[in-house]
Amino acid sequence: MENSFTEENYLKAIYKLSRRTNGGVSTNALAERMDTKASSVTDMLKRLSSKKLVDYQKYQGVTLTDKGLKVAVDIIRKHRLWEVFLVEHLGFGEHEVHDVAEQMEHVSSPLLVERLDKFLNHPKYDPHGGPIPDADGKFPAPTRVKLDELPVGKQSKVLGVTEHSDSFLAYLKKVGLDLGQQFTLIDRHDFDRSVDLLLNGEPLHVSHEVARHIFVSN
Amino acid sequence: MENSFTEENYLKAIYKLSRRTNGGVSTNALAERMDTKASSVTDMLKRLSSKKLVDYQKYQGVTLTDKGLKVAVDIIRKHRLWEVFLVEHLGFGEHEVHDVAEQMEHVSSPLLVERLDKFLNHPKYDPHGGPIPDADGKFPAPTRVKLDELPVGKQSKVLGVTEHSDSFLAYLKKVGLDLGQQFTLIDRHDFDRSVDLLLNGEPLHVSHEVARHIFVSN
DNA sequence: TACATGATTTAGATGAGTCTAAAAATAAAT
DNA sequence: ATTTATTTTTAGACTCATCTAAATCATGTA
Image 1 (tube, rainbow over the protein chains, first blue to last red):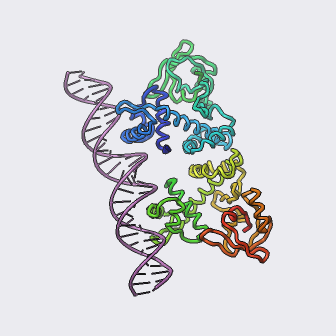
Image 2: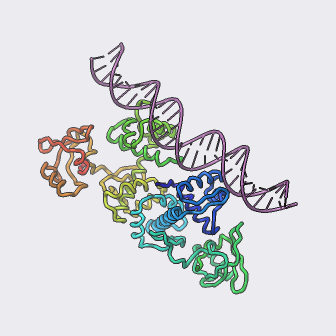
Image 3: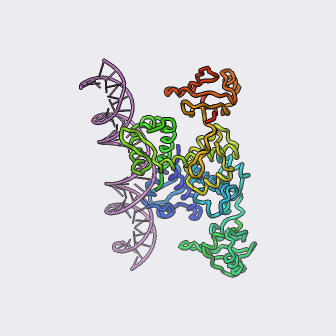
């Protein structure tokens, strides 16, 4: 009945990759994400499949079952709640928390999670802006999202940033990505995850490095 | 360089058993404590020995090396700090925290531990009265200890209890173990860990179940 | 001192998670 | 529609942590 840390990490990775892919996740994509070999992934997918956590047909990629989705979302909930705790109560910097939360997310105690959530005042977003699902696995109404996660074709507007260096802000100003600026996401290039926007009728190319630091509406 | 959870738990168990034994820990004692088989213990001791975490000669029991001691004490530090957090900030009851802390103690991040310690105001005792070692592995000056952990021969006095039921307090009153009462620990019986005290010149036999709920000076 | 008893260790297996190397299936290109 | 390239899976092996069963050591007692 228990899932190992490794299994949980695979489920989380499948969840995150399928967000973007919108469909099945390939063995190779998973291998890269998990920093392991494709053959190891195949082995694990068989195991997860036998535990009914994923739907897996060989050569056809993998998707989460309802059961697997529940586990993945719960891990994400725990990860993000711990990040809030680390930043708001222990004085960690935004960028120091990920690795620690990566460990804490596997602590298994429903009571702990609910009490932590209450202690933190039921936060809706983590320090990076990631939405925190509630105890039932429901995400907050998707009002904001990172530009690098916005679906292609969406019309949207700039809500904020997660990088506050002068050079970054100056760059945004220069290309016209000011707060409140409306735009449409025309295309995303898989090889470097850069995006093409249409902004005041003008095309604009934005690198992934920039896109991932911009919150936009959804 | 990394120790698995299992290795950490063995080190902790060796540490705790050697507190009482005052010397080497036997394979069987360890097997019982770890709820596993003696053969598994032997395997693990070989591994820990090859990592220089324990001194182990076959058939001769095991002791921690300085390196192993450091690891064990650090685990205990983390365990107890998390217990303080759970009780004082998340509203856990004294008796609900152990299993959760058992998991949290393995989260590995020196920065986290130091910030947690600071957040909690450098507590010296956990909710059960267990002393919390500092970052250098030093325990607070041993002013209090559970009666079941007091060395044989010690003169001491009652400082408090961790069990507050009426029946327990009534029992203490009846046998004369009031707050501040002085006594000497005459003997400890290994088979049931009960102890014999000398109190106002009168002998008193106290069961382990009672002794483990009484704080005494040291 | 030799024997019986209990504690401990070895030998051999198993399951989880991983790897490399090789085979098989799919997708792309001519 | 073949061939080529890419992706994915199998086969076999390794480590960690565990087990059972059998062998070995240590010790107390006769």
